[in-house]
Image (cartoon, rainbow, N blue to C red; front, side, top):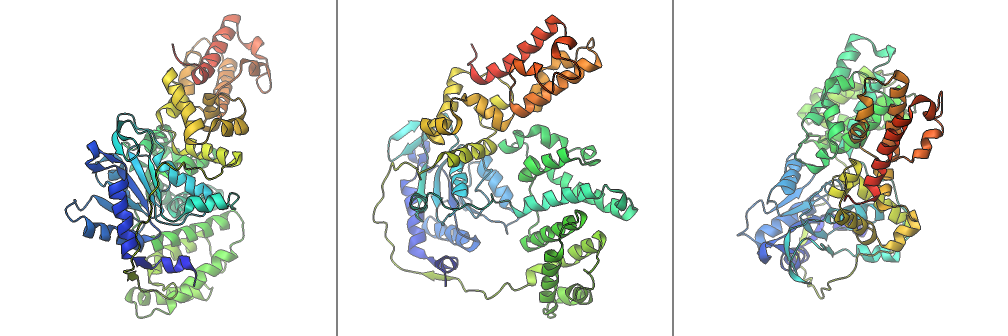
Length: 541
């Protein structure tokens, strides 16, 4: 039996206790050293997470019950716990199982505890990214410098030798970036709603179903908490997809926006995770059918699950649906099934999937072996031998996860920045994500601000505001307005524009920039374009 499988159900009490005591005693503290700073423990599975919380309660019975909380998929309160962790004093410790690896933006996090093996370097750096947000004014106490103001560092407690693994395996093969089941369900619902716009689905039943899909998606966007940083940083897209009219006609552009960032923001409140996974399977089946892709793998999997259900006749809910289940299991229901038939399968079987036994179950084993901490070393730099491709990946992931960082947000929204803020930007690229040599190898002499603009783009509302003097000028003709809109599109996509581009394709057709605008208008337009770039490279006076 593989060691990782054993570790999923064998927990040693002394090991868990040592991890918790070390965090409480050696971690970065706040409030003059009286309170542990915000901390995340990355656990290996849900049982492990709950056992950690249980042991903490035994070790520290005088602390409030919400001081430490498990954040797991099967708990329908998990998203509320994450919001409380982001916005309130408690919980102080969040024990996460794959739910806080990315997207959680809490500048107060000062301790990360790796109590699980991680074998993806991309995921590892994503998880480390939970601690990289600066937090000015946070008074902390750590064993290296004692009391000091501002968050100058955060601690990583690596109990499973992840750093050692990546140092020894610098070229570990990566898989694709993880996408949650909830994200996949949302994206597939959007793809299905787009497919249902076709003439073949103009019937009343299909359109009623499409309206239901749209409302399911829209309600999740409406429910987003505007106080969260990640939501505020995508305000334009969030507000757009809270409006029902945005779903009337789903184009390739709207599908792209629903995929990123909307699907990564919404919260699916389904408490039955097995049902959610079945939704994902069935929506994938439906989308493949619409796109004329191979559906046989989906058909076989659904039929196999139905066969498993048909053997559970002692379960009352299964027995009630048994004739239907048998038709699905033997293929009669699925052969030549249309979308409505597949939706019927999804609706009728989703709540039953949890009854399927997924192989032999192990009884959890708690051992009581001595496992003392023999040595603690501070100040080891978190360097696992990045090459410049890893550095680029970290930069892109950072800009995606931390678009709400003050300096990144200012660059995206074309706000002037101070010299101090440009210094913070430089620190991000040459201290937090790597060093100056890493940056030079990856991006040459590209200014930091322009790099952010190239990767994170310029916010469209900010671009429209910059060119508002032209767009609102009633004296401009249709051709001139169309030209300005093309400039806006270019600036949004590329982050900035060099004036010489105005005389290059596609801006030189059907008539050139020089022919369309007067001399004064040309000067004014070039002035706006230059100011947009200047905000990304030069400190405000």
